[in-house]
Length: 337
Image (tube, rainbow, N blue to C red; front, side):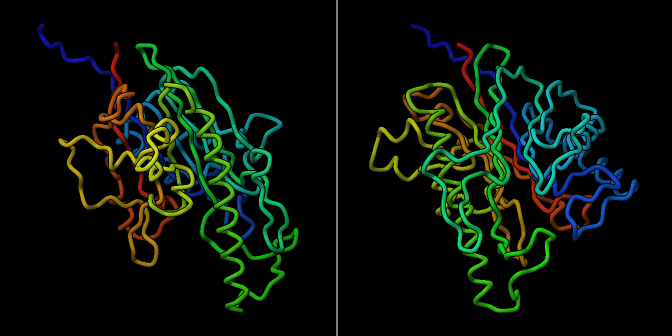
């Protein structure tokens, strides 16, 4: 019999932390100046140019205060995305954008079958944070979009932004400090609060991943700002990749780092970082995929062809018109038959 190679449909996905993308003349954090009209235009220009370069079918975005600002970036990119949504950051009356913390969103040129935002942790997954009390909700709710490719294949895309490592100091309702921030032991406690919160969010996110993958064959892409590297405890709480080594059944609900799953023909550059902190590069922005994208899996429906890091701007100096995160894009393939 003659071997007939399979036909593939391609899917470009990208994750972008947009560094406080907000409308002009509006205060988003009390301790930060609002964007002037000129600053806003520069940010929209810069972000639109990056979207144009990425040219992704699905954009997962973080740190959006105003959905209208994201739509302006997309318009400036010259690309067409029929579906744009940032739940919690809407600007249609009576909504006035995100309040308190920025939100995650999605833009796609694919058909969206379902959109769902997760606010509360599953029952029993809350934690008690010293000085703060119960932590039972996501600060930035993960966003699930179920998209449909042209050949009919559904793909789940989950956009995430976990709690940062920034110390969580106690403050009153007006934002005034309630702790001595110069006391190093107080600083240790504040950092532990952040870790507890990120750990709880990661565990809650893991439950969402299990529900999406268990006993199904719908491919899943999880991407966003994990605020830690791929092999950290909190990231692996979400992915559980290591469990596959000793439990074959774990593959069904595991996630795999797209960068490590790239095909052999991919050029794996040693510039795979998405953030620079105090001079040290790190990978905080990540793309994970389910086993349907793992070429060697017997349940494979496709593969990861290439992962690219768009991070040159991280060396151009601090300027809030640019993001302080690199953007990550993956080229995925799915068989059409």
